[in-house]
Length: 282
Length: 233
Image: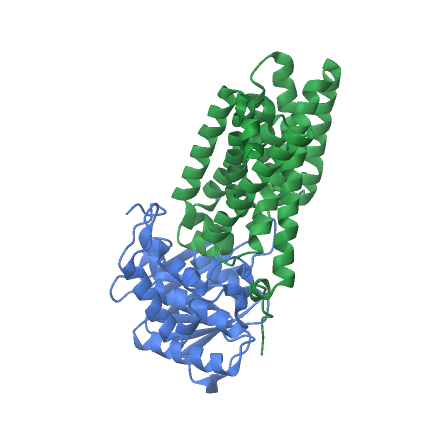
């Protein structure tokens, strides 16, 4: 028992665990929609694009996460704008924008020669989370999960049959932009935990793993929260006892959960029951 | 109730045509040639009409324009005597099956329940009344036993029945069905035909887009032929 309690004699470890679990659960909830709407690359784009925002705010002495919010929202709008007339395919713009933004971020940070801070931006620093950061994480989580709860049925229809949603008068663009806005906020919270490079993993992996366990959306969201919370706490413990990077440990724990769920889906009879039956056309 | 859009949920006007299309022209964005060119048609309530034409003739375009998925470039569309959208709860568009994400994690019951959303609007949740209506619709289509099956475990014919059940759950008066008889098994074909005649018996109106018109099937009251966005007869 002491093994589990020992790390929590330190306040920074208590904060790290709470932050990791809250961020994990938030990312898992929104990640379910990201995975089902096949937006995994958008999460990747947003998280990588936050780097110049972080860097500029750092150089100018502003709140770095404010900078990240501005950069991710700017990127989200840019992707929508470029893909609007189909002059550039969405996947192409996602191939261009985050890499260019990321390069810009690296350039700005390298000009400051502060590689320690760069490492925190790239890979997160959950052990260094402050009380103020925790409040920010809590606020964004309550806001995002509240919106998800209020618009749950409309978001569900947006995923499964957007045309029908439009014919009954649901403002699809408002929902799409709203989802993107909350995704941007979630990514910024994720960056605090695991950094710009690994944040997309928090969004995608628990949700993708949960898809192996159920055929119901509500249960999928619950499962992905459970997997995210397990990975988050597992990662924090591993990082404490083995002295390893916390962000990388959390993401690797998620990867491990994914493998277990995939094995369940492919190898066990209960998992096979969930698999798609071939659609028979006469 | 807070409705999804400012459109009024108007009641159909008596004596009005179920659908009146005059001189309708529709373009897809970025295309110079219209997908529908000065198309006009009148459909009386309580009839089943076939909209016949090859792929690319403009059948789906017409349905999408009527149901508000595509903007109208010029011309008039009125549904039960109201301008487009004012009566939108009475119109239902059944897309081709390929336009739905059948891998999405939800059951048949969940999908058919989405047909009730229009009566709920924002923030209101489904109640027992909605579930009762949906159960009845599933029964009418002979798929009550599939209610708790996941939607990716359905055959093509079953998918078609699920979409029709959702349209029934919406309690629409004008059904726009896109190729409902395409690539389905014989049993479903019979069920769909029975449902079509039931819907007609209730005084509702159906327009069926099809590339194959067999008058001997005895389900249609008339047909309109489309080619390259224009009515040919």
